[in-house]
Length: 419
Image (tube, rainbow, N blue to C red; front, side, top):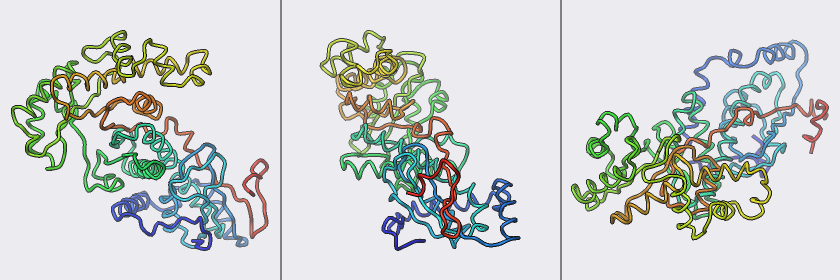
């Protein structure tokens, strides 16, 4: 580790829970087998050739082709485990914004020792860095909402869970550092990744499967759920199962506040919106949704609302209405639209349940969060796994050797890495 470089990454004050989660990640990687077994064969062949001829010190430069947030601790730990003699310099601290094609790290190391580790190293760089960037944008867009990491079912297993959650946690921290009003990611649906967000165990609401088990009776589902929740956990009902979001939300609120009076016992109540994208939430259609959002924003007219959300310049730069139509769908369309969130808030308030929280889920990626924040939609928490990269190709990190024994040498086209 290059401790002389002031930008080298040293996490001496890392939270113990986060530290333990990353140690578990390295243990999972080790459990897959030997380094020779999990790398690309041509790198093993290269190691054999170098071992049989002459040793050389190689200088590796690692970069990405898109903007990211630096989330490099998994990669650093992997190098410490497999190539402890590597001298690592990082150019951006953890949580910093990294422009495309800028060096993330430089590794000076005996070539034969590093060759087989290159593939495994790159696997642990791009994915968390892109997750961090997406989480950063989402948290900044809706600073007043808490985010819950619900990506688990979209991942391929525990190793991916830990990499994604580490990235989201770093992005969330970076957003808070930029704006102290940001609530950011406050928990995870998994015990596995909860420590990355400073929690001891996973959290969440309830699945549709539980509501189905009660024949669609969300109140009965809450009666089953409430007694087994941790004392400080909110009691959240999932209200879209029967397509009667407002009806079931009000029924659940009456049970919580008026029948059980759980608020008087220090409990918090909320409803979760997860309406299927093929239909409108109860009480809404397209025209009614325009009215709901327009009244909330005090803006009259469908396209005037969209322009207020996008800003005049962005609105005018979209003559083909590609972005405009996407924003119209998010605002007024089916599923968990901005209108459905606002309408739920209005109906709960009208019934006297102003303390009831609203949790929204379903496709809350960076773009949707931008629209939510622009409207100041009244959502208390967002459950999302949409900080995951949209395509795997955007996570591809690249490592090139830029010097052998201190002599600059790189393939044509990568000379920019000398800077």
